[in-house]
Amino acid sequence: MTDQNDILFERARAVIPGGVNSPVRAFKAVGGTPRFIQRAQGAYFWDANDKRYIDYIGSWGPMILGHGHPAVVEAVQKAVLEGFSYGAPTEREIELAEAILALVPSMEMVRLVSSGTEAAMSALRLARGATGRKTIVKFEGCYHGHADALLVKAGSGLATFGNPTSAGVPPEVVQHTLVLEYNNLQQLDEAFALHGQDIACLMIEAIAGNMNFVRATPEFAKRCRELCTQHGALLIFDEVMTGFRVGLHGAQGVLGVTPDLTVLGKVIGGGMPLAAFGGPRAIMEQLAPLGPVYQAGTLSGNPVATACGLATLKEISKPGFYEALAKKTRTLVDGLKAAAVAEGQPFNADSEGGMFGFFLMNELPQNYATVMTTDNAQFNALFHGLLDRGVYIAPALYEAGFVSAAHSEDDIAATIAAAREIFSKR
Ligand SMILES: *Cc1c(COP(=O)(O)O)cnc(C)c1O
Image 1 (spheres, protein in one colour):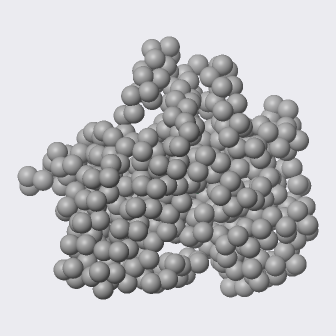
Image 2 (cartoon, protein in one colour):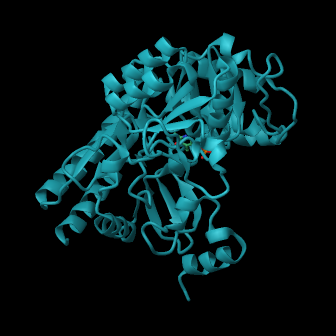
Image 3 (tube, rainbow, N blue to C red):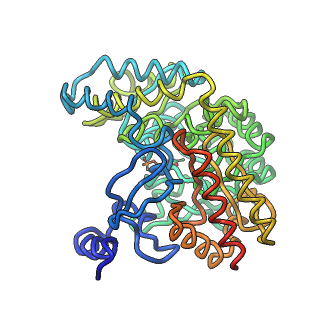
């Protein structure tokens, strides 16, 4: 064996389940050996064979500035010298909280945590605590981290609740989770008509990035808001992926819909473990130590992570940042589409800000079931074709893609050319 990725994968599998610390990294859906990354700079990373890839996952969203942005590196280096963690409050946490609140007007207060999973789980507990209700509504294809109550798929009808999607989650734990079809207005209305008085919250990715890239229609997002207001439920936007990624004000800014609670992660940490949830003061003050809803974390608001997040937010707040990023991302999806059309490959694509998705079909799917009709073999051929040509996209067809400020026009053009070559050889 001379391929260093193969060697590392074998070593990893001996000591880490599946050789990875998060399942999608294992390339199980696409086959082949995962690339072990040794370093990254700008729009690129290099694997264990020192092969360079144009990176379109950006750590699954956080690396919006590209890797190793000098201002971020400097902020982190300075913070490290001042100490890694204190378990006591710092001024930098206030600064980051103030920066987040200034950019997301629906949030009056925020609490910092260490992962998106933790933020979503805590927002859910807060919603239940604040409303005194049990039922939660989520949508098929939306991912909100791996808290027990959220690892659930639809039951057999609206009267029945969900079934666990993971072993180790007792059915009782998801018995209050109602799973609905994304963008299905009629089902949404029926669910609230049937269960409205019991619903604590509705949690949604308003631009979904965990079933490739699917937008909630404006009517659907608006209806979610109306129904929650009417029935006294809280609307939670899970913006772990879309926050500071689709635009400076998240999916709520793009759609013009105001949620009660917002969950953030990924970009706000700039690549460090950092996430947050927040909303109106009256709801947030239900949290411990002020209120009865318990929530805590040893590394919450970590001084190095907050330095990284703050430096990242400062860069993305500069005038014209998202206009340039959105334009570049559009150039990529338009170019891929044109290449596919030229080679007779069914294809459609969409993007918002620095986040995109493409589909090997002519329509843009509206829900998870349609996304999943994608031809797996065709996607895998495209994935491996791109990988061979030094382009790294998400190793699963149900994931979104990410462009960073560091991607150049040449990177985009090279990506489109690589895709066209693959489409032409189908
Ligand atoms: C990534 C993601 C999460 C989970 O965040 P982790 O930091 O991986 O725990 C939750 N919700 C959405 C929408 C995400 O994209």
